[in-house]
Image (tube, rainbow, N blue to C red):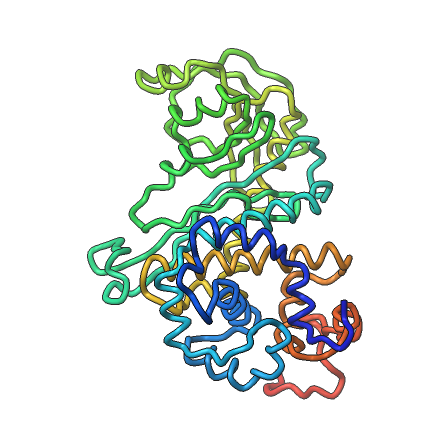
Length: 389
């Protein structure tokens, strides 16, 4: 894999080039393109994500400075920011969305047996959305409020490996509930959501498709109790009930029995009530599964901190979706590299190391084994404190 090649070139070995070509051909991405192909565009944007570039000018300057080293990675010609900007504006973003899905499937196979803290044979997903604020004068197509623009990133996260397996990028005006209609429902899988997704007409679709949901109940839920089961209150559980909705509208939208579990979170001193259509799992397992929903919030926080999805290189809808999908591809690619090379480091550490070693001629395994990162709470012995208490 090495033989004197730069680290960036070795990273690209983990990309299925044939599948990428199929995605490009599907949308005629290279039609009448002579020099700057879709793969060249992907490499430039991947370079920007891995090295934390801030703008098109920043990308152009760095790529020109490293042109000789990039030659063996596949970039043979100098890159102008106008060329990259035009490609982001005009090349169909679905090319990179489809390619990201191929990487996602590859990563999910690698992480299929990953432990996520709950003993569960079935697949468990966490579903939520995050909002990215934009400037209304630059992004008028994404108007969210009267004086504000925004986009939403709706994400279904596979809790085994924290791999995003379903993503929709929409305008900020699109309500989260509408995305439930587009979710690919897998029989036997668990879908964990916050109470903002409590829509009983849509939740009944999960039951009809033999999928299970876990959602927080709203405080004004109108129901009657059919049965109660004993619980171990020392674990935080308060009740485990079978209920029927009796509201004039909800009883029609969801006529089937529901499971209502009450749980007291002693850490946050908060009482939580969950609704589910699964009656087989232990009540404490359902409470633990809902706690895992926080992983999707951590995923949003991680990609906003470590990838470029808040500062965009273009202003059109196509350019933004292109950048987001390539960022997701890089996230999944790093997860694949972590598993394939059996690295013990976190994704954050791997990205940090790659950002400073991308153009070194070293075996990629050696790069990760030689660099030791100091724990955040550990200070070097010769480090002085600016202020002494």
